[in-house]
Amino acid sequence: MDSFNQQFLYSVIIIALGFILKQSNIIKEKDGEGLARIIFNLTLPALIIVTFNGITIDYSLILLIVIAILYGLLLGFLGIVFFKNEDRTTKGMLAMMVPGFNIGLFAYPLVEGIWGQEGLKYFGMFDVGNAFIVFGLSYLIGTYYAGDNVTFDIKNVVGKLTRSIPLMTYIIVCAISMIGLHLPIAVLDVASIISAANMPMSLLLLGIYLNFSFDKKYMTLTLKYLTLRYVVGLALGLFLFAVLPFDNMFKFTLLIGFILPTSMSVLPYSVEFGYDKKFVGTTSNLTIVISFILIWIMANLIL
Image 1: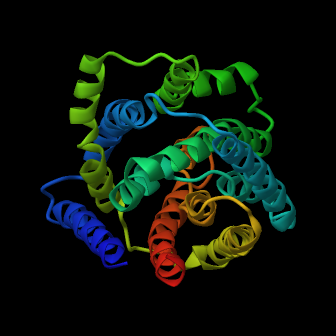
Image 2 (image 1 turned 60 degrees about the vertical axis):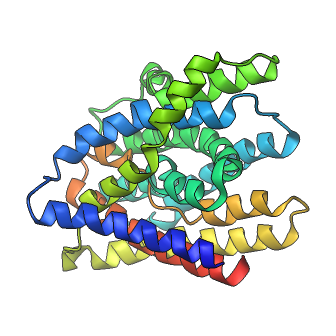
């Protein structure tokens, strides 16, 4: 437990460093866009290559993909029902935000520091299912409620999935491993060097995007959103942790996975569909803080 709390402390320090650099105008928030592209398209895929090369895909790992998809579908349904009395645009914005998690930037650096590659293997499979929810279901909900002039295009959804370099890396590397092949040593060595940058860069980016300003007019909607997301996530996560007959790492993945922050993809979606991007950004930012605290509490109670 001491090493766990130590990793959390180091993570807080790096996140705080990113926040201080932004507040000091040494780094601007807009610089985070370039850093995010480097993480999603280079350091995270490199980490996936190192983690999943030669992996043995067993039943429990496949089940994590299925659970992530089913849970995302459940959240999407609950979001539409829970916010049914809101106006069409607000309902679409909130329901779009409910399914999907920020795994690549938020979970990966913490999991890597605490559980190493074994933990990344589990969260990586959970992220595969999450990708289909983020780029499929969330996008579909956002499109449907955005307005009459916005139409759902299946080609656009498929395009978003195939253009997701982390998702394609998962699929390719797992497929290579399943047929018994291995990547060349040179590729693994280069990927290993690049992947070492993923954790600090991801944590710094969280600090750069951290914002403590909050508009009071968002209070009621934000509380409704947070209540749905975290009450359901905590309740189901704790229930599955208690009853599932799998190893602890599998159960930790679900417990922590269900209370991760909102996916960062909802931010560009809010711009594309004309939703209130300030609300989406503020509320998504708040989930980062809440998830960090909840994960620390859950870990200290259960680990």
